[in-house]
Image (tube, rainbow, N blue to C red):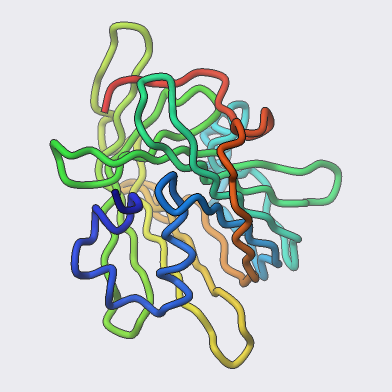
Length: 226
């Protein structure tokens, strides 16, 4: 078995920089996680119209309602087996903003039916979207998101485009500085730019050793539907 990103990208995974291949190989098969620590040069959000949506999402660790510069940052990619028995990997980002830390939580699984990664957002995984990773042709990685879906109890509905957002993530390894560089941009078809950040970090790859997922990374609710 290979990592989520290897399965989703196929031969394209081999065109990533070796350090990116290592970073996105976190999984149960490799027995490794990836812990990144660095600084986001800038965290930004759109105008006044988007702030209520950011504030609402922040209640369950979806997006970040604060802007800032030179913000200490951690990302924790730890593999585990979810309640449905699927391999999952956490994507928990912590931004140490003045006053209080802010988190942007997600957990990812691979969907064989759709041949892509499913990204469950927030502490309760009420929002999900498909992710489509591909190499950028220069050793870097580009990830684009599909439409959002909302799941609560028996409800399983697509989020109308005017209420949703599309994300683009770009990440590459800077050999000169020995750091990963990342930029994230979320946009809405009506409101334009919603939220994003850019910065850099270093990474280490501790072995999980079959240990349970740490409590601070485990979602409060797990969504079973792909």
